[in-house]
Amino acid sequence: MPELPEVETIRSLLSPGVKNQCIEKVVIRLPRLLEQVNANTFKKAVQGKSIVSLTRRGKYLLFELPTQFFVIHLGMTGQLIFTPKNFHENRKFIRTITGLQRAKGVHPVDKHTHIIFYFSQGSRMLFRDTRTFGKIFLTGKTWWQHPRLAKLGPEPLDINLPQFVRKAKWWNSCRPIKALLLDQSVLAGIGNIYADEALFRANIHPLSPVNKLTRQDILKLLRAARVVLKKGIRNAGTSFSDYMKPDGTEGRNFEKLMVYGRAGQKCRKCGDVLQKILVAQRGTVFCPHCQPVKQRIAPRTRKQKEK
DNA sequence: AATTCGCCCTGTCGGC
DNA sequence: TGCCGACAGGGCGAAT
Image 1 (cartoon, rainbow, N blue to C red):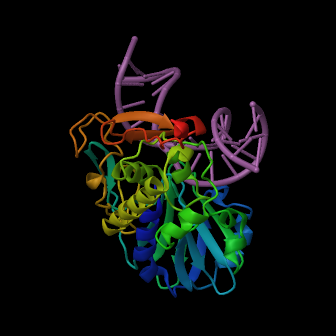
Image 2: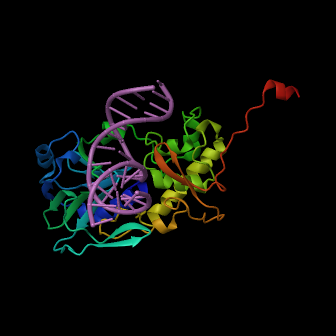
Image 3: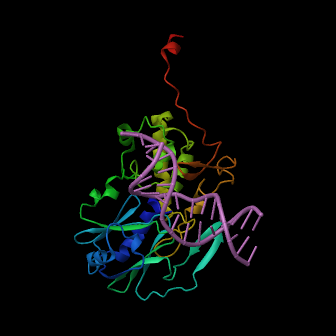
C-alpha cells in the first residue's frame, strides 16, 4: 500500500511531468472515488486549469491549481501513471511472480482505470485503483483546514523528534505501540509496512503498551522510523503487490525489508523464524528474539524504598 | 474521552 | 475444475 515513501516517490517522479501542464479534459469513469463533489463540478473546477505544483502531506498528494487544490489519496491499491505524448499502450501487460504477485509495465487503460487527466500537450495521468479505496477531493487554498487533512499529525521526516516526544500527549496511553505508529493524527504517513520495519529496527515488540515504554524507547523508535522511511524513499518505494512508479516500473525496497511480508522466514539479523500476529486489525510481522516485549521498570514504591 | 470495531472493495490463494 | 471463505488494510463513522 502506498505509504509516505511510495507517495513521496510518486510525487517526485510525477512532478516534472504535470507541473505547469494544463488539464484539457478529465474523464471520470468511477465517480464514487470523488469525495464531497460530483463529477461535473469536479470537471468544471479542474478543466482548463494548470497544475502549479505537486506536494505531499502524509499519504496525500496535493495538486495545486491557480485558485484551489485537488487532493488524491491512493488508498490501498491506487496508482498514478504518467504517459507522455505519443505513448503507446502496452497491451501485453506482464505479470511476474516473485514470491508475491507483482506487476510490471504500464497497464493499458482497463476496468480499473477510473479517472484520466488529459493534458493539453498530449500527455496523460491515469488514476488506477483495483480495490477503489482511493479518494479524490477538492479543497481551497487553505488545504490544511480540510477535515481530512486537518487531523493529520506532523511529518515524521520534518520534525524535531526530542521536542515532539517531550510535547506528546499520549504517554499514558495503553494502546499497543504499533497502533500509535499507524495513527495518522500522531504522525502522518506511516502505514503497515514501515511500522513493522521501524519496530524491528528499534527492537520493540509491536504489542508493547505505549505507557510501558521509556522516553529512550520512543525516541529510538521514531529515529528508526525515520531511517526506514528514508530508505524507502531512496529505494523508490516498496512494490509488493500493486504499487508502481508513475512510469510503471517497480520500487526496489521490497527485497530490502527486514520483516514485512516475511512471516515464517528467518530473521535477517538472528535467524529466528519471524512470527505473524494481529495488532490493531493489521497483520504484523516481528522477530520474537530481536523484539522482546519492553517493560518500563516500574517506579519504586515507598515500601521498596524503605527496604 | 479513548479505543475498538465494522465497513467499504476486488483479486488471490488455499482447501475441499 | 470450480466454489467458498479468508485475507489483504486505510480511514471513517458507529459502537463500546
